[in-house]
Length: 503
Image 1: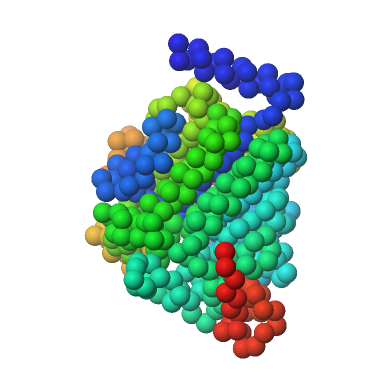
Image 2: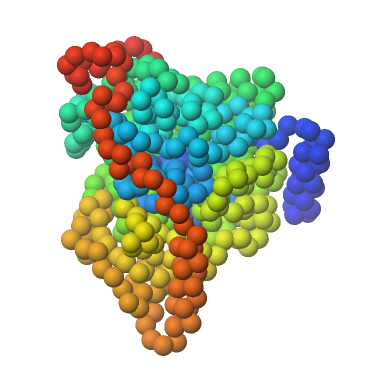
């Protein structure tokens, strides 16, 4: 009976498109440095995430979902464009406050795709795809009607102002010095500098709720993108969450993120659009293990942020749409690359006329069917034509051509994750069956696996032949004059860049 009802609902959705009725709304939730094992619904015993757990219980949980990079900026570029970051030039590493480059304006984002169908679009949270001269690369130049947030990671500026736990206990750890304090932007205007982190999530929740309410009032479909600063280091939490988690500062930050998700869900319910809204949740990269208990947890997965092992690029993911998506678990292979083509199909929007790496996943979402994706390619933080992809997943098998540890994944007992695990070429490539060995512990050695290695090699060669590296935006360098400052041309910069407006 449930399957019949779901089929009827899907037919109604298709019919609605045919007669010009309102297409579905989309809410895209994107956590920061969240590990595969960090959520309660993915097995962590101490994480308190009731709203995300509710989405998982009433939606579809992915076990094999991947991002394209083990660090922030390139992962976000791929999410929004449906293309590997090597095509758009968001490599190597991440963008900084004074970076000259950013996501090129000729790249087409999810927001731009949906605007062709009359969608209202907004982003609240962390952008991290460039600022540039006069805001050249900000979200408002990439299809978003409105933006409230910090344009890069919140540790990319002095964080001495950031009080995490009452009474006025400063955050654990260090942030970048010698640059401007972290600004809060509304569209392209600096609203506050430095940002008041203890009030930040409250402001984000109010902004998101107002955007949803206004869109519903105007009878317009909407796309809300909420890339959270949580749970990136250093962790912070407002008064409602500080000290409330049994997991400590990381748990408090995760709880606060979950609380904002709860506010968004409440607004969707109050405005009556929850049943016409696809909510998709995932994260941008694996956990920063070097922070120990103040970082995340990769669960069974090997290593974490900065590496091309599973812990660096396999993420928790949840899709939720009452009446359309049946609660359950899927082992189908899927990626953040697939979100753009999926949203486009559901909205009836044409795809960008460029080489896309994503495939639509409606059969997974609505039928628990197989994936159109058979492969996933793992680029390091510094991809190059010379080395190509470091690893390839084909069906259940993963081959490592190169391995390397990372500073982000220091502190784990596994020496493969350490910064001292230098670049190593493997011939033949290391081979793991991720279905029986998700922790990548047992190399499949011997002649009986030659056919699998040959198949993966053929897939790799075909993919790399199609890859055209875009001009590196990050290699364009840094100009301190481009660091966002609320008082233009003030001196001495960066100390003079301070505006204490209330949120």
